[in-house]
Image (cartoon, rainbow, N blue to C red):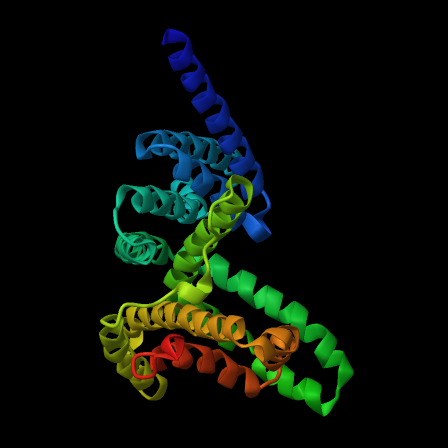
Length: 325
């Protein structure tokens, strides 16, 4: 009995250490840092939430130490080092808290992801206000965006063509600053929720492949009917903001609308996959249809239609039961 208990403890320590190392290394690839969520989800699926919480705490401590080391030599007038640590560590902290919240909560995965995303959105407000209150930091961000915009404008100014002049007008530095700010505030929560869902989905796929479990099949994914009320509430506000600028108050509605549309897009893809599996003709044309959809995403005008058609297909299942035909 003692030997078995010792072996179980040693196994927990080894697997926890491997999870920590892999996640920490993946986080260093900042372009795809969200991949560090995958081993954490894998660990949490096999262990209790208490053990998962311990691994998350140790990883957060390692990230905190790394951030303190990286910011030690930075001296920017008007910007406190604490603010730099807060900015660098806030997003991964929210992601780690989201994982812990996911395993603490019970019920359907979709419900848990929505709860942790709403909680993250509420908690992030004081963090954003603290960062925005520092004029030196926001000024530094503005200067960086302007500098990047000028680098993009330089080759166009040398060209002198009509197309280049049109693109130059779109790449106005002040316009790019405002566009960057709007994109961040309108879609940051959706990106947060999407990162968590991506990590969970990949972890479930890996677990299913190696343990012989049933993988997650998007063809069986359904959105509860009551979610349509949320969409009906937020979409009119989003539409209003397109014509009348309602300022900061529009951002929560943009994020909520994006999250709900992504959820219905999953349902739309589920309908398509279901019909493909049921129809031999569609199954044989699957590759062609996939290529066609990807091509539409890169065609101006057509990409908007393609991106909206999938969520609308998911919404339409409220009235048309595609998977019961």
